Image (cartoon, rainbow, N blue to C red; front, side, top):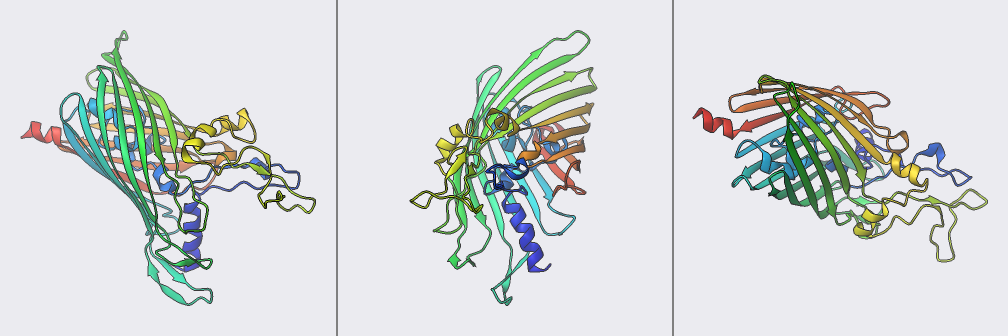
Length: 402
């Protein structure tokens, strides 16, 4: 593929396929768009097909081998002692055929109280031909990003557990090439997740069993990242995810789960900058841009987490717009066959991602296979017209068969 086309695609990925805020001559947001952008946005992509078919909901779903991404605190409640899963998601398949996301995750329970888990997430941007300013080829390269993490989870009570995960993030987008006359390098960061999980069984007349679970996960709490020594460092996508899941075992063969996830990026919102009489950005005597509304978003990661709850230029209304939600429904027959559906919604001023999802799951002996398909509603999506899948290895079932 030509360099220009791949460069445009790569740039879209780097900004999370979202539009940056624009300011008109009245100092208001043009089109009311004020999205929050971060580096290494691949960390926010749903890596597994089960959650991908549930509208990207998973913070309180029943635990599986891919729970590391959504909430590692679920692992002590896993039915099997250990297991792992491999997931694959094509990316922008309507335009290119060599951009994809791969995910490997697994867990091990020492006993009914303690578990460890780990995952590797790898995002390949395909083959890109770099050129100089005159168009001469500098060679073909394959930019990539990956994150590797390790988590420990423990039951703190019969119905409550907690987890902490540590993550190393590596992003090599330019492979040392000069960008605007500046030498570039791979971006690196370290981060942590904190997860909480609660579940309680109770009886409802007419049902064999009912289970209510609640989950909370704060992910990617960590350092900012940069790709050159002179540029401002960018935030990584620190995210708050919480929500419930209600599972009903209708009888010994049929069960239904209904879940809802709420998400909010814990990253400062871009402010609105003032303009001079010529429509250009206004600056103070020290040369700094003058903020007309909102707050300075160039703050430390910890300050940014707290500031993200009250710094939106549009006040409380805009803060509410920064909350996206995912809703999913999962039906199981005899714990062997599953049908899933979901919906994801993001406000039009914060990215406007809206899509339906469908999927299915199969379990046979020691293996399982999940599929997911995405249907966008308002705008194009990098995952549309693609089939994502996850291969699951159930070692508990293998032990039983043996």
